[in-house]
Image (cartoon, rainbow, N blue to C red; front, side, top):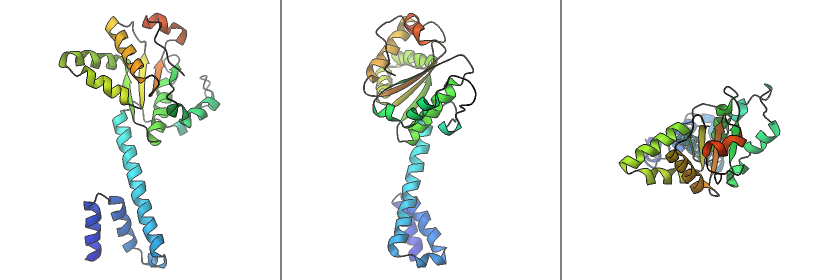
Length: 219
């Protein structure tokens, strides 16, 4: 009865990892061979693992990544112009700590979105909040927000997001309002957050497409 009360109290304290670890230990007679410190350490480790897994699930849900991609599944054998040494440096996530950005360009089917989602997934695993959005949807949501008065709220949310994955930039010519919105997002994030952009457009064509030479990214 006392053990059950302890388990219930751990759940009430929002310590489910410790509660499950205690229940497991109570069902293992041989656990008594371990010292109190060793048993308690195992219980704390279980709670730590539960918390980290719960955080990761929450971050991945919030990120809304288009693909369930992982850096471990990146294919380096298919000739797509992927430099494995560059990817290994990006996997370290040092570019995030430096508030730098990633631009991934290539034709349809080259795996741009997969690679971007894999890097974003790794960022979530390292504890960085991430958000995926296709550029047409971004422009649409910002346009709608002007009408319902939530424009500032969305812009602030985008500015606070540690990694913004903007997919499919440059699919169609930009309108003046879309151009202003893109520049607003880039300006708010510059030097304080990181952005991943995928595009079919070669980088040398970006200024022509965007129509604003002051829009730039540090890769």
